[in-house]
Image (tube, rainbow, N blue to C red):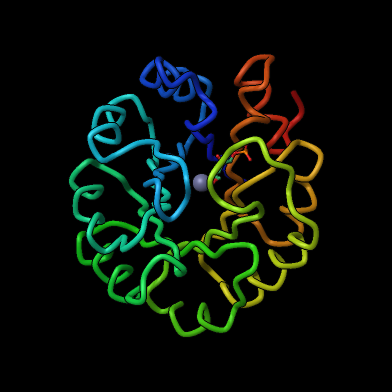
Length: 212
Ligand code: DX5
Ligand code: ZN
């Protein structure tokens, strides 16, 4: 089980220190929530921030693009050193083009689906997808509780997404992580549950289901 800490929950004035601390605490992935003020109301990080954080991230840097028309931005995030670039199917009429662009840049392509989005489109996009990100809250902010029915949705996606990473994003806690893992989740994003207090390494281990 991989836990991907979300830097959205870190102190925005000390992001590089947070990324370094996560690497030192053993995080194998780090998740960067990119918001554009249009697809979602908030504005967070751009490719320049991704590039600045890259040297502090040991392992996989995972850029979650909550932006309209992500095909316009994937090259910048590839150049900035993101290993996984995830786009929303709801954010462009050309999601296939966006996913194929990510792979053409030599990066792993992620497809994120909002809580209310069905799985039919996903089925036809899977040949171009390395990771499916099931949004278990409405995108746009950290610290929200997981929506009802989402463990079932993870199970349904797992049945389709065989062999691909299945990321669960939003409202993950040490309490619901075991059920998400049993449902087929392979990468759990965690923001508030990780930075809420206590030591990072212990919180990471608890979320990963390891004794701590
Ligand atoms: C929501 C983001 C999530 C979020 C996770 O729009 O995509 O990555 O920051 O944060 P928590 O774990 O606090 O729900
Ligand atoms: Zn995210």
